[in-house]
Structures are given as C-alpha cells and as structure tokens.
Image (cartoon, rainbow, N blue to C red; front, side, top):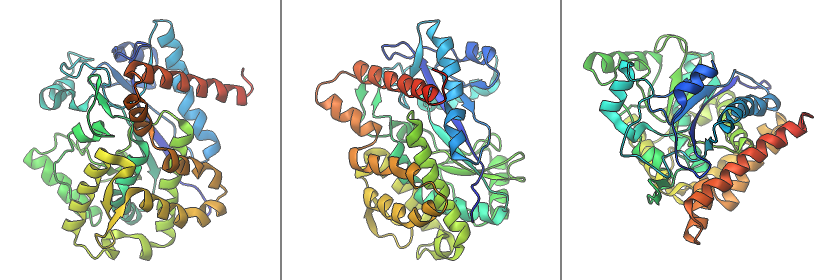
Length: 378
C-alpha cells in the first residue's frame, strides 16, 4: 500500500489564566468561532480538523485554530492551559457551559468532574468494514502504548496524583466492560443491547480507548477513532504518534495474517479484553515505565521495549512512504520521557507547578510562531 489514510483530529483544550488556573469561556468561544464546540464543563472546549492524507498539511490544520483561539484569549488576559486534567483545580465543582442543555445535565449528574479532561482523538479513515474491525482489535490491544507516549496529566488540584495519566485513571470508561469486537454484526448487536438495557444513553456513549466511527453509528462506519491519548501540545510529537498508529494499521492491511490479534493471539477474546484493560491501567499509572502483557501470548514486556519493537517493525514501511523523519519524535520520548515524566522530574527537583505550566505555555506559543515563520508569515 502506497497511499496514506485520511487523518483527522479532535482536539480538546483547557483555557485559563497565564498562571495556570483554569477559567471557563467555552460558550463565548463557540459563539465567536463556529469550528469550536463547547464541552459540558465550560473550562474546556474542542475543535475538529478537516480530514487530510498528507503529513505536510496536518501541522497547520492543527495549529491554525489554536492561533485564532489564542488571539481571542490574549485580548482577555487568558491563554491555553496545557495538561489533560485540572492541574491547579478546582475539581470539586462542575462548571456547566450550558444550563439549559439536558445532555450537559446528564453528564454533570452522572460523572461530575471526572470527565473534565482534555485529550486528542485521532481518526483514521478506513472504508472496508472488515478491515475496520481487524484494525480495531490491533489498536485496542496496543492502545496502552499510545497512552504512554502521550501522558500529560500527572497533577490534579495542585498536587501530583501518583499517576502519569490521571485523566485515564479518572475517566469513566463506559460501558465498564467492552468486548473485543469480532466483526460488524457483533458490534451492532452489542451496541443495540447496551442501548436497550440503558448502559449507554446513545450510540456515541461508548467511551473506550478506541472505537469505530462514522456518519450513522453503529450501522455506517468509515473510520477508526483512537481516544486514549492525553493532550499532546507538541504537534511534531502528535504527528509522530499519528504516523506510528497509521503505519501499524497499514501494516495490518498489508499483512492481515500477521497482525490481527483476534485471529493470532493464543488468548481468548475475553482474555484479550481483560489484558487490554489491565495494560491501560498500568500505562496510565507508569506510562513508559509500565510493565505490560503482550497480546500475542500474554507474556510480560516493558512498555519501552514494546514500542521499540514496533518502531523497528514499521521502519521499512516508513522508509517506503518517506515518513521516517516524522517518527523521530517517538525515539525522543523513549530516550527523554513524555510530558508527565518531564514535569514530575522538574517538580520533584523543586520547580513549582505554576512555573511548569507557564514554561509549557511559552513552548506552545513558540511552536505556533515558528510554524508561521516557516510559512513566511512572520
């Protein structure tokens, strides 16, 4: 396969003061910008990028809405706050963005501030239904690796939580137990049953690490959505993570007999689902330092070693597709740690949390300005 898949991102962001405290303005932002969507809690919001195949165009699609938002926020002495949890609080109170919205009321009553997080959802376009579910199996079995690379939420209410992704620890996976889907009909029947029994309030209420997506779920599907990643503010790293995901899925498409866990694993479907859940918790707690279990046979493997093995596996394809340079960000994270690890190292050395957040805010602005200079606008 020589052609890239369509790729799109759902980017959730926090807004707040330049000292790092969260301030909610999502209703005002969504009124100002039609491509921004308010979340139930007003402290975060979301924008969605247009589908695109070429990596050379993806970075600007990610940065352009961020620049517009930043300009609007600057006029109000506000900014974009990095991290995937309420690092400086207050997680004790839900702050509704729309008092009249019944869905927002449902979220507040049932989940509270557990859902007040920010993240990146990566969508890959796949038209073949059978391929969607093969890819879904593979990506779910390796989702913990992508969480480990992206972890950026070690703090909550001003203190370290003991986890590298507090977001994934607290986020209410719904329904609590999700099987490894065998095919489209299995998925449709399972979703319909959850809706009948009230375990899901609508077809979107499947909050798991990865899920099928499309215009009329669960019946019409055309993409895979990886939902497990924390917010990645470094767009070069986000593109590296996306490239690793895409290369893995294309490898599956090229070699389905070698990479479909549902067909290759020595474990049962039920055991695989339990293994996935267990790996996700381990990665949320310790990210790259986590001890995981491989989907092939349940053997113990370190998170770093597993990612390194996959990097080697996809390298020939990356060279063939001329995107090997994009993957360099993965090795940098393996060598130097993810955002959570870097923050915790500095925090434990005595740097205050507001300073850590402030430095990361400046890094975001520098990246935005540098990209404009590269395009000749500055």
